[in-house]
Image 1 (tube, one colour):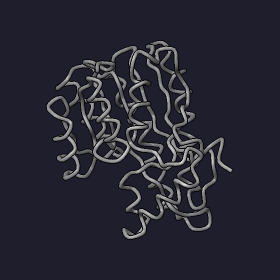
Image 2 (cartoon, helix red, strand yellow; image 1 turned 60 degrees about the vertical axis):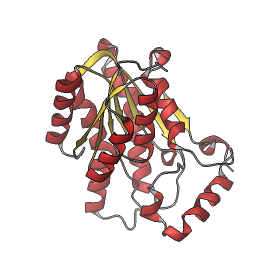
Image 3 (tube, one colour; image 1 turned 30 degrees about the vertical axis):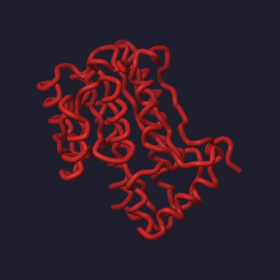
Image 4 (tube, rainbow, N blue to C red; image 1 turned 120 degrees about the horizontal axis):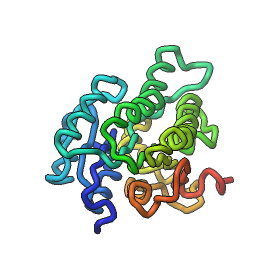
Length: 250
């Protein structure tokens, strides 16, 4: 397969979950490049599975110096960058009555500020005509209990796809956003006791109009499309990959 043959990609949060699913699909379509994360163990295991055309860089996407280092090293290793996937992020549990200022700052730094500066720091190293893929969440469309701040941050990320595309028209760099729903990733382990995970997944699947939760490959295949020339007429768009939850769930 060669939809992304010889394209150079940087995938933040590419060492696990949705990010690794995207990296795997990119590899399958001929891309090369970098996965970025903070957990050296999962970086090592993930890049080993991706093979020789990928390297791993340990970096904190909320640190602007780290971001500068990521794109400089990628450029030195592979040349100009064709695709940026700003995937790193995490859900924050809490309501307007419970989230503290420190939690607010941490959540917005990771889910919004880091997205903005991932793109900002990447631009000097990107090829004109490149593609930016942002990762939203259907929590931006549905007010799930305890995801107040996370949903708000992701709503802003969805807007970024439009605004970045407008800002970068002169360079023909397209920005689009994928909005996943519940997806089968290690994130479950952060919120649910281990012995309850399978039951929770079955519960979510029963609520999904399509009858199952998402897989990282579902998001990965959509990211391939947005990164490839097949989507050259699509910019500033949001693609819902959420099993129908946003518009069809009751």
